Length: 127
Length: 127
Length: 127
Length: 127
Image 1: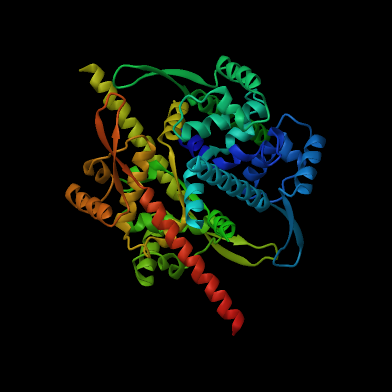
Image 2: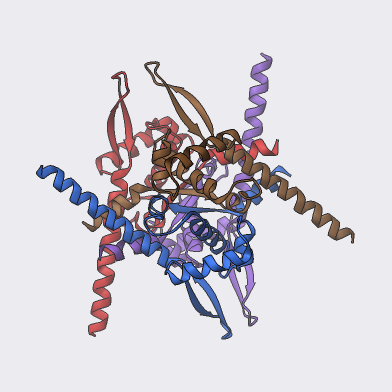
């Protein structure tokens, strides 16, 4: 019994997120709802669901399905999420989300911050 | 140059979160601001800062310091975060946050959901 | 340049392993070569390669391809790895590895150890 | 009961390792015993034990305490692990291990491999 529960907990899995995302999301013009929606997206992708619906994404959030659709559209427009085409082995087209653009932006902001800190360090040495 | 950036990125670290938290936080009566505040807390604890201030916690969030203080107080009252006393080797008392209560609640909700699913499975077999 | 390197590092990914595996593998009758082979397997599965060959698995190890084949066979016989059948949408059969049996054994050993520690604690109270 | 087990499992924690370490350790002149010893070290550091003894490190390995001491010495000589001095608030000196040199070497090998792949790509274009 206990073993089944433990195994199920284990299978639910975990996501590993660079802390830079938590320190940079405001600078990246994301708010808390958008951040949590992205984390839900990452959880679904991790579990193998590559194209979760707004109904699925919002089911564990405090927002409605239509609010979730709006947020999702905005995240695509702002270039955090991308829809990619895939083809199955028998030629059927399907769509999947990619969050690679999110990590690109995250790295951009990290490198920008590093540059700013280096510049500050040089300025402090000069004075 | 590039190596320093990569090493700094690596040192910033990451946090690993059970996906159960993302599927259960609404059921646990948490909203998106509280969830993100908890994730900020986990990031700080992970980096070795055991008692981050509301100013630190809110600095990367879209909320003000005083809103953050209110959220923090609520999370303690609702039993998601605990303040623990510690003593340094020379007897100086210090305070630190513990998020173990969060994981206990998370596990409670997970086990509850498992039970519900088992009950459903039995009911479906009977009909 | 630096950004590309950082993005590539990020895309290489990471694996998250319960520390229980490191404290229990000897008790589970695994040696260091078998443990590292399992970690290589987990890395490949994580990157989406569901049926890595002995040549792939051994390429980053200090053992030969044929030694790796032997180890792999032994891990399957001892029930740490399973070969599962899958079918693509157009009915083509394929094989993939599953390491769920590894985690089941790991949980078994963890629960056994917990029981032993509880028994010890009770015995100490009685004396 | 089941909850305690799950909570204990959770508290045992996990370690998150870049897959680059698994693909590069042989190129970094490490063998499987040294790799597993490093993973044991990382597990102990993660749990807050900053200076595990050879007896602790070897307890879950198939090697003896003295073999473990030898391996440890070699890893320090080859520059994968560093011993750092720390001072408690009341001025008592203590020692702790740092595995930052491991990650530096890992990043070096990753960047080297990237360069080689870029060079190969250019050469292939030219032919």
